[in-house]
Structure formats: C-alpha cells, structure tokens
Length: 131
Image (cartoon, rainbow, N blue to C red):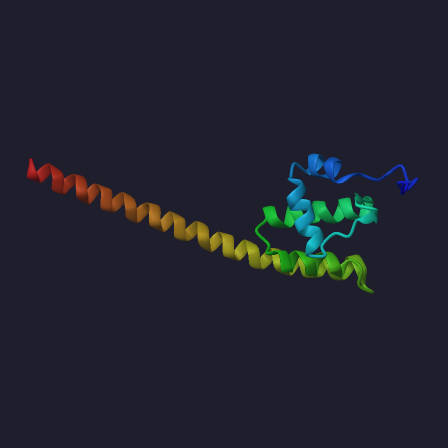
C-alpha cells in the first residue's frame, strides 16, 4: 500500500473541491487540461500549495470571464524567466481588453433596455387608442 507524502500542507481532491466550492469533476477537468498537476500516490491525488494557488487563479480568471487558454497563458507566465513581472504585464493587458469588452456590453444592454422601454410605451399607446 502506498503512503501519502509527509508534507503536512497537502490536500485531497475532496478537501480542495470543498475549499473552492467546486465539484470533483471540475478539479479533474482542470487536471486533464494540464492546468493543475497534483501528485499521484496510487489512485489518490495529492494537491500541494502550487496546485491550490493555480486553482485559485483559474477560478478567479473564470469569474472575470477569461477563457481557459488565456488563464493557462497567464499561469504559465509565472514560470517563465521573467516570472511574476511578465505575468503581471500580460494580465494588465488582458484586463484592459476585458474591461473594454464588458463596458461595451453594458452600453449595448443599456441601449437594448432603452429601446425595449420605448417599444413598450408605443405598444401601450397603440393599445390605449384601440380601446
């Protein structure tokens, strides 16, 4: 029978999924994509601080609307020679793009709501004339 690592700062898939409020399937999906790489002891997955940090970054990126490939690029930049600096420079560029996209979507939604209001008013006026 295999023994688990002696590092006291490790987590099982159950613990990591519970901490981030995601399913085991979600964690395994990110593993299949190579975004996280837990240690394997037999059939047991052992997650270390690096995996936990990466999962947190993945989920934050998803909340902000970044596609998984962009998240992969951002996370992988951390391991690049310029490390954190290149990661932050890249992320800042992506944030600008994402903000611009979201602001345009907000303007589009506001325009659609205004148009819907005008159409509703027109329909109510037409209905009033029919009565």
